[in-house]
Image (cartoon, rainbow, N blue to C red; front, side, top):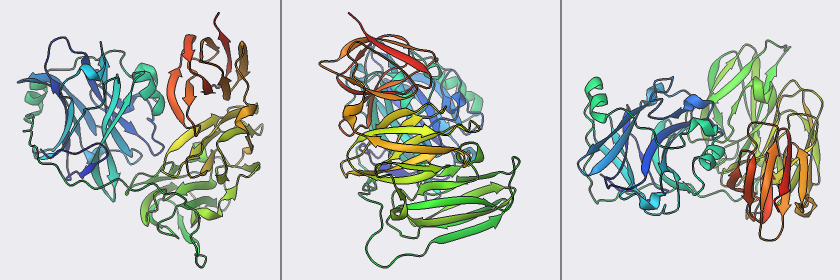
Length: 492
């Protein structure tokens, strides 16, 4: 079995493949459960069914199955099976995650994840060696690239457990078990399906893995003559190859339903091949019938979109350097991409009174990362982190219907309210915690209100809590991702 390091990847052959999570069988070690998590283009689950566990061992699409666990020799193993032909087009990645109960992964010996073709031919194995303090772990991911599937070793750990992992991928905490749940015996599953599933032999020969793409420092226009926009038009359902007007750079994708439209008009698109592109899916419910998205985040040349529509439509690709500047403030309507050049800051978000659609704001980073600024569910202004990486710039995406107006205003971080004794508010807010941090009583009127620590670039860090009660908050900025009323009170 070829061994790969964290961050390396390997191609997967066509047809079904199996994933084995294995560890050394040793009494007294923490219990471990594995799960497959299906993610859409924004890196989020669509609902609870996208989390495939031993307790719910089959995805509704039939594309992913949890085959259970068993002891084989000196190993405890759990297996998952993926059939790429059945994976829905809206699914971009499938994470392989592991959770512990009764201790951290530092007490779990010999943890590894292996991938093999349906006929048992080995593909790759990743051995986990640096998760001493973690209680939840993304071992690897299967993802689409250039029309084929690949496996990447990830090794992303979480010291605060399943809740932190759930927050990163939009999973309800209840959808992940508080403790691992035993599945059916592996021998029973194999006997039923008639497919042997031996643990593949461990060989020390490492694979020559394809490196991860280098993060793009700036997707703006390069020097030289201006490039013509690339335009695609059609009528009704169809597929189209979308071409980057400036390969090597990002681009703005504008979409528009043409001609008369009404409440029954629809226009949706879903990427069907190539490398995962953040937020490269649009549909009327979240994005309206016209708007903009950021495409080719890693500077690719082309990809294919599947269009579903009952109208004429137009797609226009133009260089990312032509994006509207956020500057000291901007206003507009509908789904829009803006460019921000400046230090990390707060972003005040205000929407119009049209309640016909939801509204979310994100930052899009140079490395392709996508981070929530705030949800604006009402006309009440909210504030979130305007995260900016070391390059000193980012893109901002406003996602809503073209009927919804909005205003954005960057504000210095020092204008955030300070938690001296008690603070209360409504909707998203960034607060400053002084000194060495504090134990705080958290209250809110919604089922879940996540609080996140923020790093030096205001990028989200650890998920601090979701539920009401006493929680320890670290010093520095904290993002309150609330949609209702909330209060924070320092305990005596």
